[in-house]
Image (cartoon, rainbow, N blue to C red; front, side):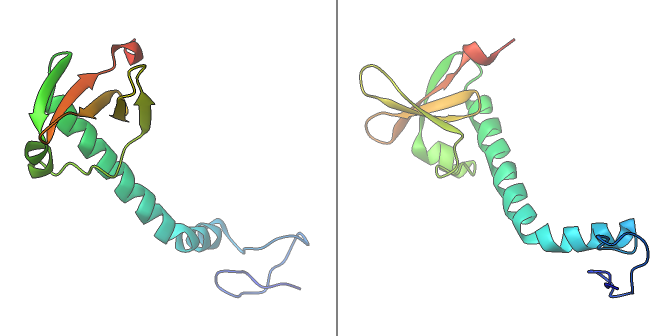
Length: 118
């Protein structure tokens, strides 16, 4: 007879049973995944923040902005959702539907990808 993986109580019933209750199963899985969930949650929060910043700065199709303005608002340049090269060799970094292209002198061109609108 096996014991519950969470609380250690003896298990009755099916031979492949691992937990004595749904509460133990949920507690075990929540504890097991808590660190990875925190990492993912924090990254998703920062991605949403990055998108909000780009959306705020770019109410129209495109706008130029300084790196210091983006950084001052808490933009994290390390977190993006995709990279798109252009035919001219430029590379746009996207956070969902907003992208930015580094120009000269720490100036960025921010654009909204209209293709993703419904």
